[in-house]
Image (tube, rainbow, N blue to C red; front, side, top):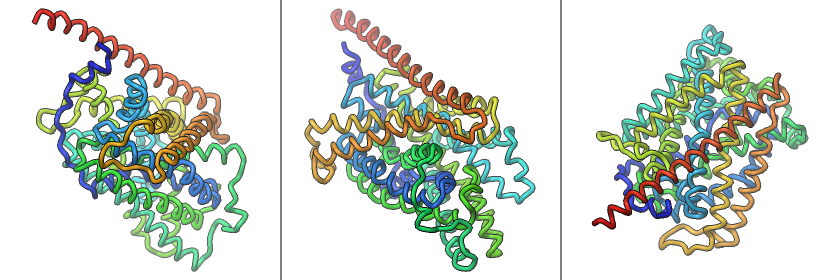
Amino acid sequence: MPIEEADQIVAAPALVRAMRFRDVVLFLIITGFSVRWIANASAAGPSAAVIWIGACVVFYIPLVFTVLELSSRYPEEGGIYVWTKQAFGGFSGFITGWTYWASNLPYFPSLLYFMAANALYLSGTHARTLAGNPVYFVLASMLGLSLAVGLNIVGLNISKWLHNIGALGMWLPTVILVALSAVVWARFGSATPLTRASFVPGMHLKDVIFWSTVAFSLTGAESASMLGDEIENPRRTLPRALLLAGLIIPLIYIVPTIGILVALPPDHVTIISGFMDSITIFAARLHVGWIVALCAALITAGSIGQCGAWVAASARLPFVAGIDRYLPAAFGRLHPRWGTPHVSLIILGVISVAFIVLSQLGTGVSGAYNVMVSVSVITFLIPYLLMFAAAIRLQNRPMPPGAFRVWGGRPVATLLAAVGFTTTAVSCVLSLIPDPSDPNPLLSFTKVAGLTAVTVAVGVVLYLMGAARARRAALTAQPAQHAA
């Protein structure tokens, strides 16, 4: 019996439909937006605003409409895993799900390092002496990860509130930043000259590498689709939520990028703490020091909520793979009390802790952060290559009744997917290039390329083991069937 046929005899456990339209919109915002990418963009200068717009045209718009159609065609639990499996078969589906899941292992530490850096602003200037202390960052990251994983094990009925609060914690500080920057700009002027020439994107190596990070920061439109069976009426809810979130996210990226540059010149913007540095400067000039702690608390909550949302999305992939027998059956089990994929969640948390520690070895806080971001970018974009390719392949199949169709039909859907595929491929290549300011570029390149290659290789081995396990199960079942 082929492994694809063997998949059909395993029934998916029943999941609770805890996510409503509001929850899905906020989930898409928390997974598709982060204030840390605003600081990263601001370091490139005013031209970052133009690059944001360009990235929306060549990546974000193709992504949103590709996900709109695919999630409407196949709204089941597993999202991107299901789409590529439908297009290319079990191996592609598994590698898509595996690399998507594995990309979060270095992503969680980088996100939690950002959380830890911003949490220092809650205690005044004295606590900021820990800004270069690896022990603090490791311990704070483990605490945040434990909270995110623990609430998800209890269930989406509970953890969705962490995600919803996290979404507010991410975008409310951007509103505050924009308001403060407007007042400071009007009263004191901008720290960065905002001339017409300054908005022209540069072509230096550092600028080109930055483009791949911008593309990565606009990912996440597919995240809620992983929870398809836990969303009320997913075929209707997902497209509506995607369209609304797709309008909000670019706006709250572009405008605050300029806001940070009103406070700091580009070469003074640090990736990890640039956002809060700007808030601190604005607060001092306008004598509203209390607002620093408020924004720090919001961003800290937002980062933990974002971690929790990505834990929820990525943990569904091993869960579905366990149901499909590509992974041991334990991955496909639900918690007897809370009805959550607890095995997948726990294993994700344990391995993420290992990544937090390993990424810190032999480097400082900034170096560890940059390596984790680069590994996340490449590994995370591999599933996007397969997803865009799947969108093109699936155009040959009829649309299910009531499914969303990209306006313009098959030609437009194919063009959008092709543009998204090309942008993703270029971003993968650019992400391999170390930052020019890296003191040890060869070591960083080796870490990034090596960890990426090992991640894919492990996925191939796991798939082959799963396929062999399914074939043995099928052969064992055949004599029993004949005897019956």
